[in-house]
Image 1 (tube, rainbow, N blue to C red):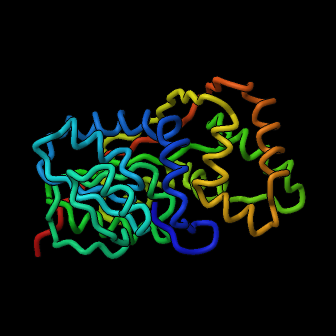
Image 2: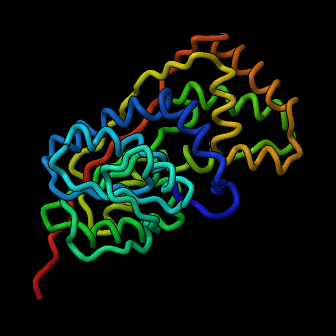
Length: 272
């Protein structure tokens, strides 16, 4: 996931916790769905943006073995981790707003839960359109509102309780800050895309325990930095786990997670 400032920062120690505690529960179910949608398009050249630790990348490599997959992320720690996890892809550090690839070089651009992190989404979508072949497609997911995500709404409740005056707002403003499909569609149109398919998808997440979930979010995402900036320590973790357990049970914890899936096609350029 890209991001360089404020509540979008990622440190080198985060990928391990992110991969261990969050990918199997929160991201893999959607990665499997998105990979199936990507494979159905029979792409030859695939570019993945905000690839993170390679949750989607590894499935794409298995489900579409004939495709050439290029995986990118702005964060160097994620690229290092992902390239070890999914070495079959060509990994590269890249800013989605300034892609280092030639025009029309890919049949498919995919992005799982990364577009919310782009500071200028229209600029990033314009770059996606540039690197897509005229017949290419852009396939991506974005989270719904935080209230539609059972795990993250419970976590946010714990953070609100631990910091009643100034709780961390990362979850509300970034992962769940791009949850209006009409806004997404407008941004795509501004970048020269037409939406071919847009649907809400709710999948179920299963975690071994609320303690594992809390550990993942508090050590493997920018929530960690927000908590540290507020002087948080073990007491915060205990409060978050207590609140999450009250809402989800001690474990195994099961909750629905809602997202939007978009498939967009570039609008043909007018001939001069």
